[in-house]
Structure formats: structure tokens, C-alpha cells
Image 1 (tube, rainbow, N blue to C red):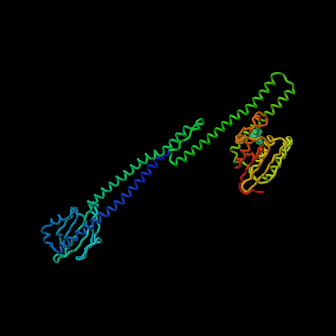
Image 2 (cartoon, rainbow, N blue to C red):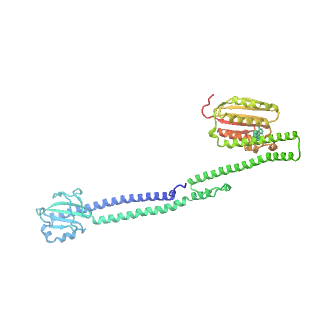
Image 3 (cartoon, rainbow, N blue to C red):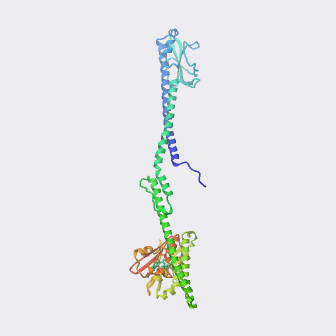
Length: 469
Ligand SMILES: Nc1ncnc2c1ncn2[C@@H]1O[C@H](COP(=O)(O)OP(=O)(O)OP(=O)(O)O)[C@@H](O)[C@H]1O
Ligand SMILES: [Mg+2]
């Protein structure tokens, strides 16, 4: 089933950036808006206070109410804002001057007594029907012995319009921030993620026949460089595994073709003319030998194929190595004697291993030693144990192997001595099996030539957890 298509990384990141940019600009805008509003309101408060102060002094020193009654428009012109309110009245009587163009309703206000200076706390807030904020105050003055009340209010009509204008600009800036960041972010991200698209294209073009092509990670950003290096390394491993698999099947076909060809040849020759019973018996016996070798080979190949994923089936238990060596040497004693060889064992230790597999690995090494060592020589089997690991060494006197031959000993079907290729008892799989068994145990098998003509194979087991004795 096809997974639901997720929104692209570019789109998601672009939107995220754009929203962040939008919020930053909006917060800055709101802060500026509030600061501006506060300063505008303070300014209008001071204008109201200054106006009241001014007219209170005028009334107290120069101006009489009668003069005012004579020319009220004088006042109307003196107000700097046409929406502002200004009222002069004697308490309980009709106002002498009353300017209130918007007919706004004034809030309840205390009257500041004559002689007391005005301050901001004497102002009260209100608003018109159209929700325009207003600040108002009332003071009392003594004019020619009469008490006069002066009321002034400022309606922030202009200020509100100015603030609304400013708010609209902020909204435009927020929208622009979103658009510009989204656009630039999209372009930059698309550019930045180009290596990912190239990688996808590259991966699409990979086939078993084109496993050798690699990504060029030189102009890739650091984060993606890691990915592209890991990807290339994966291709290396795949190509290597695939190559070995190919080689293995080619070798396998080759190895089986030879004995099958020879079996067929023998049978064809035998059938050309009538043969005696003895001849038929000899033929069947030699064919059986060949078939046994093929059967051994098939069994080994099956073992190797299964070993690749047999980790879970490992039956590990603590094994006393002196007992194991005894068992294996006992088994090979007869063969060794035939070639006048002696098997010497020394040392002891305990390893956590699958008994059947350990015996198989050891047997393969000892069988090789008996088969390839010089006649009448001695084979040394040693156990060397230390706190970290345990080594089982099988050392014998035999042919000197070149460096390159040593490197290939553990390959499947490899035989160092070319003349043995045709021999019926050598498949070149014994050491490959040893290597597979050691890998299953998390250990390793190694080969070294301590001196000319001496060859030593070593199985190294790493101790895992406490061993039971
Ligand atoms: N102890 C040894 N001394 C010298 N040469 C060895 C020794 N063990 C292995 N070799 C070389 O390594 C080759 C590979 O050994 P390996 O056990 O894998 O295969 P084989 O013995 O030829 O066949 P098989 O074990 O499958 O019957 C051998 O053909 C031999 O040339
Ligand atoms: Mg062998």
C-alpha cells in the first residue's frame, strides 16, 4: 500500500520560518503601537491640563465673565482641536461658554478647588458614542469674587485615526514579512536540499549491474555529507557482497562441473564395450568416491549458507578445552599415525561456545594439519588463556605460503596447492567453515607463519560474561 504523501520538507520549513518571521514582526509592531499610544495619550493629557491652567489664570487675573458672555466665539477659536470640549459656567447656572461639537457625554469628575494646582490624577477617562477615548477635568476659579467652573476635555479623534493608520501599516508589514520569508525560504531551501534530490535520482539509477556508481559529496552541506558518505559506504558493501556472491556461484558451478564431468567420462568410457564384473566394481567404487566428495561439498555449502543467519540457533555453553582437545586428537590419532605424525596438546581454558561447532572448527584445523604437514613432523595444539580472550593454536611444519595465499586461505574453494584442485579429498571449504563458525561466536580465526615452514592457525574467543568451571 502506498503511504499517504506527506507535505514536503521545503514547504513545512518554509511555512515554519514564515510564521516565525510573522510573529516577530507582529510582536515588534505591537510593542511600538502600545508605546506610541501611551505617548500620544500623555501628550493629550498635558494639553488638557495646560489649557485648564491657562484659562483659570486668565479668569482669575484678566478676564471677567461678562467679557466672555459678550464674545463667546473668541473661545471657540482658541481651541486647537475642533472636536474638543470646553465649558465655563457658574455652578447651578447655564454655561457662559459651551463648546461640545460632538455632543459627547462627560464622565463624572471631581472639581479641583480654587488655588490647588492641577495634576494628571485629576483627569478622568470617558468615551464618545463612537468609542473615541476622551480625557477630561474640571477646575474651579475665583473670578471677581465669583466661583466659576471650567471643564475641558480632549477627544482623541486625530490620535485614534493616526494609530489606526499605524496599525494598518503594521498589518501590511506582517503580511510582507510572511510573504518575503516564505518566498526566500522556499528558494533557499530548494537550493539547499538539491543534494537530497540528486541522491534520490542516484539511488533510482542503481541496479545490480550498476553497483559501481557513487555519489559525489564534495559540494554537499556537512549534514548531508554524512548521509551521502554512509550511502556510498552502503553501496561499497553491497557491491562487495554482490561480487562475492557472483564469484561464489561461478566457483560453485566450476567446482561441481569438474567431478560431474569426470563421473560422466568414466561412465561413457565403461559403456563403450562390455566389461568384466571387476571392472564395473572398480568403476562404481571410484564413482562412489567422487560422489561422496560432491556430497561433502554440498553439505559444506549448505552449512555455510545456514551459518550466515544462524546467530540465534547458537547453543553456547562453557566448554573445558583440555577435554575438547582430547576428544579431537583421539579422533585423528589413527590418521596421524598413518603419516607418522605426533599430536601434542598443552594448556587449558574455558570458552563459551557451541560444542558441535567448536569441534567442527577444531577438526577442520587438525585435519588440515595432518593433510598438509610434512610427514614424520609434530603437530602442536595449544590453549593460551588470558583474562580478555582464549586462543586455541594449531601449529605444524609444512609448505611455506606466500603473503597473498595467506590472505585467501579463508575464501571459499581456495586451495593453496593448485595440484590439489583435482584431488578427490580437497574442496577448499574447510577454512571458510572455520571462519564462519568463529564469526558466529564473535571471535576470529587467523593464520601466521612464526618461522619458515611453520604455519599456525589460531582461534580467538573473547570472553563474554563469567565462565562456569
Ligand atoms: N595446516 C596447513 N598447512 C599448510 N597449508 C594449509 C594448512 N591448512 C590449510 N592449508 C592450505 O589452505 C587451503 C585451504 O584449506 P581448506 O581447509 O579451506 O580446504 P581444503 O583442506 O583444501 O579442503 P576441505 O577442507 O574443504 O576438504 C588448503 O588447500 C591448503 O593449501
Ligand atoms: Mg581442509
